[in-house]
Image (tube, rainbow, N blue to C red; front, top):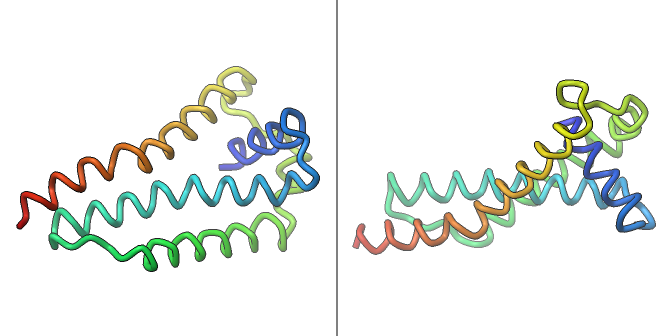
Length: 126
C-alpha cells in the first residue's frame, strides 16, 4: 500500500495540483479499499445468507476505513514518511505505475461489476 499511496500522491500533487494532496490521497486510498472490502462483504452476505446489506452498513465500513487511514497516514505522519522514501514495486517506476493503475481499476470493478452479479444471485435466492 505504501507504493500505491505514493503514486496516488504523485497523481494528486503533480497532475491534478490539489491544494492538500495528502488528504485527497488518503481519501482516495480509503475509497478504493472500501470498494473492495464492501464488495466482498456484500457479495459474501448475498451468497451465504441471501441478504443484501443496507447502505448504512456499507457507509459505516467506508467511514471506519477513512478513520483508520486518516489515523495511519495523517495523524501518525506515515504519509510524509512514505513520500520521503519514494517506494516502488521492484524498484521500477513503470511497474509501480502499472500496478497502481491496476489496483485502481480492480477497486472500481467492485463498484461496477459486483452489483450485476449480486443482483442475479439475489434474484436466484428468492
